[in-house]
Amino acid sequence: MAISAKLVKELREKTGAGMMDCKKALEACDGDLEASFDWLREKGIAKAAKKADRIAAEGLTAFVVDGDAAAIVEVNSETDFVAKNAEFQELVHLIASTILKGNPTDVEAALKLDLEGKDLETVIAEKSGKIGEKLSLRRFTVLTKNADETFGSYSHMGGKMSALVKLANTDADKAKDIAMHVAASAPQYIDRTAIPAEVLDRELHVLRTQALEENAASAKPKPENIIEKMVEGRLNKNLKEMCLVDQEFIKDPDMTVAQYLGNGQVLEMVRYQVGEGLQKREENFADEVAAQIKG
Image (cartoon, rainbow, N blue to C red; front, side, top):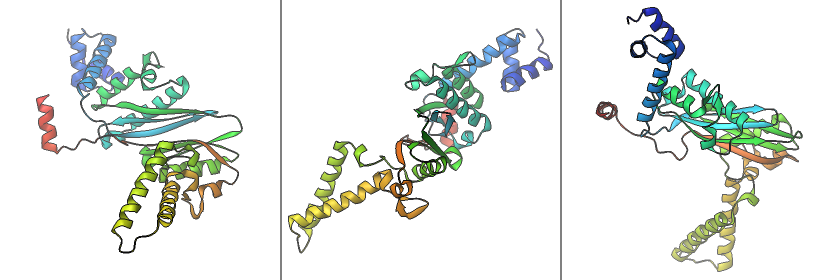
C-alpha cells in the first residue's frame, strides 16, 4: 500500500525515529501504526544490542529523594555529547525514580522493574536505539532513614559527580554541606572504625617497608623506636585523607568535618563519579569510521 506523508509524520512524532525509518516500518507493516511502532522498537533494541561491544564510560549520575527514602544512580553513555542530551537526562532521572520506588536488590533486578508496562531494560534499550549509543545502568544505591535522620545530596559538574549522605543529630543545611564535601573530597570511609583490618595492615606494611628502606640508605640511620614513630605519623596522615570525619572541611580548612558537625553523625555516604574504574575507548575519528563501516 502507498504510505502517506501524514502516516509517516504521525509515527515519527510518536517514536522520535527518523523519517526514512518510519517509512520503512510502515511499509513493512502495511501502514499499521501500532505494528510499525513495535517494528521500530525491535529495530531499536537490535541496534542497541549491536553496540554491546562498545565501552560506555561517559554518562550521568543522579539522585532522587522522597521522604524517608533516597536513591542515587549512574547511567552510562558512550560520549559526553549524549550525556548532555535532554532526553538522556530525563531517562536517568526516570531510572532513579523507578529504582527508588521498586527498591531492587541489584542491577539485574532493577532492569526487571516495571515502567509503564515495560521492563526497565527494554526502556533503556529502546532509548539506546533512538539516541544511537549504548546506554547502560551501571550501579545504584537506595538509602532509607528514620524520621529523626536527615538526607543530604549534592550534584557537581552537571551530574558528572553526585553524593548522597545520611546523618543524625544535624540539620538539612549541614547535611547538604557534608554531601558537597563528599563529592569534592572523595573520602573512602566515614571514620577509622570503618576501615577493614586488611586495609590497615597493608597500609602499615607499605609504610614500614618504605621507612626501613629509607633508613637503610641513610648516612645516619635512626633507631627502631624512631622508625616506628615515623611510620605511625605517616599512617595517621594517610588515614586523615581517607576518612571523612578527619578531613579538612572543604568550606573551612581550619576545622575538620567532625568539628564542623559537632554532635552530628554521618551514618552512610555514597559518592558516584561517572566512569570511575571504567576503561574509556581511545580511537581517532578515522579508526571509528572504519570500525563502523566494518560493522
